[in-house]
Image 1 (cartoon, rainbow, N blue to C red):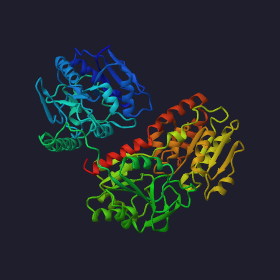
Image 2 (spheres, rainbow, N blue to C red):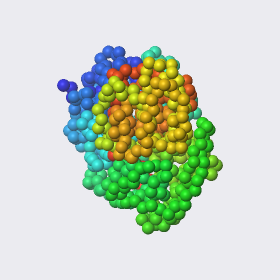
Image 3 (tube, rainbow, N blue to C red):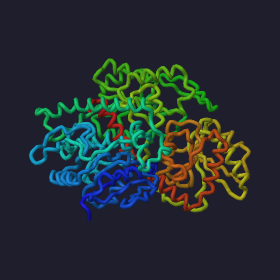
Image 4 (cartoon, helix red, strand yellow):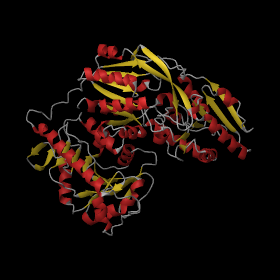
Length: 639
């Protein structure tokens, strides 16, 4: 058994970098004494003396890294990324000496690139090694490092991207006063060649002249202006980090003292109502903080039939003025809106005196929270941005102006999905203040069904939701009926759970004789697991949704999802052909093709998709979402 292994963490989308990476690796480190592994999703590398480790198509970055590490049996691992190209000879003697030092020090990690130098000198027999203060930025870094394999596994949390690991892993590492080390000089000379999928301009020019296997048709080369702007940002960030770390070198700041418990925060959560799927996340927040008070505009919206069950949460219903509006979307649908103006927001907040306000949406309640924030400068405001590019089309001028004010005055943003991140950036929100989150579903509630379905129900379709134009159910039924007419030998069963103004129109649709609709009527949230258990495939043909947590629930219950590209949950959780099928519901041909692929998937394929879907949804647990929210809380409180 080897004491250490080299692990190059990659993904299938970067396989064009594998040949030049390993060409330079062998050129500059020909006497590497460790076995070399490449981690990818499904693609294998045909490279001599390199073993490929596969994580599968559904793993997140951190989940993939955990999978790779679990396939190794070494005590330590030298972690590299595929876009770190070696540029000078590596000293095996120095690498082995650093490995021995990490073990003697019983450390978690020894970084070999001092992009942010160590904050504490060790001295003695380790003059080239320093320790990172527990509050140092990027203490858990993906720069080239030797890790204790078990220590790295302990820091990982499934569902995180590489950037989230550096941010949240650093936050988690603060519980360990010691063990994070870094060299004072670069021991592993490399050049970072790709960022956000594009070659750096200088790297592209340099390696285009080399015959080392670079495929420049696989990815673009960023322009010189973009490259220069990025270089300036990196320079300024490093200068900032160096200034921040000066205080950490002070003798008055004890780096080895036990970490004091984090400040117990008083949180106010402002929202229109409390849906049952959000309650598990709020339960976790309440347990982790000094106090959590939830201010509701209404006990429950008129179009939501759910029973109110707030459990032990501290909930107050505000005095609210409600008016009606209309949302007219460019995709052709319109939908009535209830616009809530919580009149006693300032009084409620003054009475509770929160440290941090989390306000959902970007309307009247958030504008009032901004007023409280201005009057109480010690408080902080986080905007829960439940917005997507698909849902923000067709909004009026007043809403647009309100959102601009919210963006300008918030301390941080919780962006529900990648589309919300893009929307906020387009509105002018600083990227450093945006924290991407998602909705979560309770695995204990929904994952109790087996992952197989009998043949007679394997293709039974299910829709859960409101029968309104936005959900796209009537256009979908027309295309489904056309498919059934083209395939008269196939029976199509479709269960519809819910109600709404389109119920009568749906019942009167002229459908093919082999299409059978079953209306399940109004349901309670506790009824959903049983409803999902009767179905084989979940259908979401929505024309606009910020997230659609039914996708999380259906995947946990073992249902592949035939889902609209206009719901963020579909874009974030569904891998087309892996655990569902993605289509554009306003494109009849695309919808027909997706239906055809779904109906022609055999039972074995569907069972495999069920397993992949449950894995994908289980990563978004209430605890994980609360961790992401904690990062935003820590950031805006100056932690």
